[in-house]
Structures are given as C-alpha cells and as structure tokens.
Length: 487
Image (cartoon, rainbow, N blue to C red; front, side, top):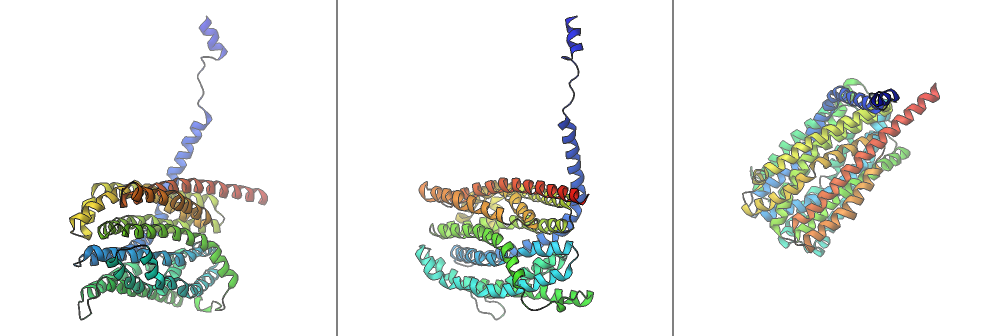
C-alpha cells in the first residue's frame, strides 16, 4: 500500500528522458548529414590544394635528399636545413601578407563581384614587388648573425651561399603566392596543383645537374640545390600567370581591363588582414628557424637529424595546410552569400578531415621511423638520432592538424588575429623556453627542444578549436539578428 502511494505520488513514476538527450541525438544526426553533404565539395577543392602544398614541401625534401648523398652529407644537410629555415621565415612573412586575399577574393567571389577579385589580385602584385627588396635585405646580414650564434663553421660556409641562392627566387615566389591565392579563391585550383607538381620535376632535374655536375653543369654541391629551387619557383610563377592570362582570353573575364592605378585603401585592407597571418607564420617558422640554429650548436649530426624530422613533419603538415586553404575559401564564400550556417558546416568538416589525416600520420611516424630516416641518409648515427625526434613529432600530429585547419577557417571568417596571439604565446612564451631548458639545462639535446614545441602545438590546437566554435556561434547569432531585422 505504501509502495502504491509512492507510485501514485510520482516517486516511482517512469523518469522522463531529459530534453537534451533527444536534442543531442538530433544534433549528432545533423552533423553526420552535414559531413555527408560537405565532404564532397570540400575534398574537390582541397585535394588539388593538398597536392600543391605537398609539391611545395617536396622541393625541400628533394633538396635534402640530393645533398644527403654528398660525401659530407651531415654538413651539407645541416647547411640546407639552416639556410632553408631562415629563408622560409622571410618568404612566409611576405606570403602571409598576401593571405588577406583568401578573405577579400573569396567573399567577393561569393557575392558575384569578379571585378573586385581582379582588383585585389592586381594590388597584391604591386605589394609583392614592394616587399621583395625589404625581405631580401636580411639575407646579407646572415654572416654576422650566424657567427654570433656559434654555428658550426663547416655548416656556416655552405649555408650562407645556399640562402643567397634561394633569395634570387623571392620575387617569383611572392608572385606565385599572390596569383595562387586569387585562383583558388575563385575555385580554379587545378592549375595550382599542376604548377607545383611539375615544378618538382624541374627542381629534381636541376638538383641532379647542379649538385652533382651533370650534363655539362658545374658541380656546385649544396649551393647548386639552392639555385635549382630558385629556378623552379620562377617556373611556378610563370605557369600561373600564363594560365590566368589564357583563362582571361578564353572566357573574357576582363582581367586586362582592370584599372592599373594602385588602390591604396585596398592595399591597406590587404595588409591589415594579412599582417596578423604574416606575423603568425613568422612566429611559427621563426621558432623552428631559431631551434635549428640552436641545434646547430650541438653539431652536424643532431642538425642533420633535426632536418630529416622537420622535413617529415612538414610534409604531413602540408595536407591539413591544403585543407585549411579550402576551408578559408569555402567559409569566406558562405559568408559572402550570407550563409552563416554553411560557413560553420564548411569549417567543421574541414577540421574533421585535417584531424583524421594527422592522426594516421602520427601513427605512421611511430611505426616507421627508421624507414623514413633511411630515405634521406645511410648514416646509422643520424638514423638513430632521427628516430627519437620523430617520436616527439608524432605526439603533436593530431593537434597540428586541428590548429592548421582551424586557422584557415578563422581566416575565411576574417579573424587572423586569434591564431597570431595563440602562436606567439604557446611557442615563444611556453614551448621555446621549456625546450631550451630541457635541451641545455637537462641535457636532453635536440629532443628537449622538440618536446617543448610539441607541448606548444598541443596547446595551440586546443585553443584554436575552441576559438572556431566561438566564431560559429557568433556567425549564427549575427545571422539570426539579421533575419529578425529583415522580418
């Protein structure tokens, strides 16, 4: 009787399921449906861009492999490592300033304003010419800078002329960056992939001829590799400019009717959008360049191992970097056509793809480290040292994929500052000091510096994922408010 009373009073009545349970299931189904809807368009745009990014990185790998089979392989690979990491800081700052094109061109294209796309492209070319002498000047300060850091003399003797050879291809590289950003934002990505894939053939042939002295060319060693890469970048820019002119003539897009006078407000807008991204790239590439210089103090073998491991994780990084470019374009287009939910779906799908690939990459680095190192060099000492660094690289692969694609999605939405602050804090305030202490204070060597950078990337991945979720909520809220005003 007492039991019945309690039943009647509701104490033993069936407990209704909380409202959030069904709602959560519904949201999960929506996400699966979103993935099925967004996956195809994202992959169609991302795959050529991934190929392009892989082609970009393959050049550095070819350079390292070619000089890795010279008699003084450790010294030659160390010089290529040091020179390429210093040059990439300068090049990526210039390329980062041009990343504002992802926002300007994709949003203009989404709104159907092709002439505005052309104006942004033309003014980005003007900016490229202005940047070239500014960015090339620091290369001539390298001898005094590197000497003060107590870099191995043998490495230093090769690194300086190698870096100067790379600097000869700086203007073509910036022009390639500008035309590429515009083409991909207007959904023309296949020429970008073709340019970089074919440029790798040009670079490989050039390396073979100039490094080893084949086909009547002088044997220039590591320096010849730098000249080969500079020529390949001239080839890339020529291919994309030629394609753009051909496309304009065939489809009559009126590219050549674009007003030629510099549009200073547009250039200023381009710089304001691109400067945080340029600083982010500089902070990221700069910390790796500084780590390379610090490892150079440990000797040629640790430096060669560092270059192999860095090339490997940079190669895996190219896949989410290509996906990030696709995310920036698709998010920007969705915002341009006033579709905030579409922007959120595009960014979320891209982040899922980047995270999935990098998880697989992390597993591969743990399972095949010796096989990877042996591709670069037969030196068993270098191989053993590289294996440990690849384990540190495996630890941050997932988070590197998340942060890279989240950065692209945020860029498409016009937010380039949040990634910059995250990279500065995590790399320079946390990761680098910790890595320096582990390397020189605790005697961990190169692995200590890699451990510090691994922690930094893990933190960046977590914070930028949260930043993207906050951006999606903001976009949806703005969309709701706009709809309410219209109603």
